[in-house]
Image 1 (cartoon, rainbow, N blue to C red):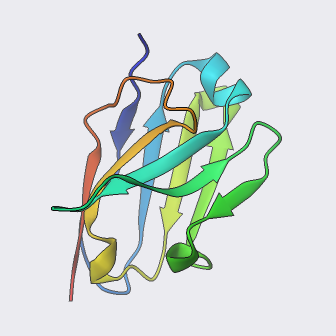
Image 2 (image 1 turned 90 degrees about the vertical axis):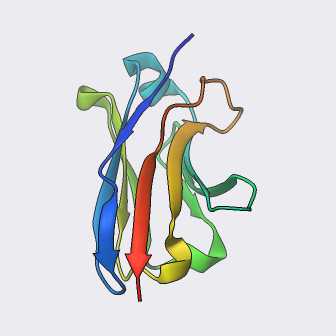
Length: 114
């Protein structure tokens, strides 16, 4: 089973930026619809953004205009650039395919202070 490795989280003030990275097998990065999910304490895991194998992107309404998902096939990596962060973005962020094909990784904690 393939497990992605997420990184790039941290503690930032509101209005700050972070770039998350998710590395997994090359064929999955290249050929799958990949998404970033997040889970805040007491909440269910939710899909935040995804990128299709053809490169098209989609976002949760609350992050549109602030987050950008991208993919680097050469590095087997999917990124999530997060700008203008808000306290409500605080969560553990995970990546997976849209069909949840991968074993969940450890995630990366993002904490936004007000």
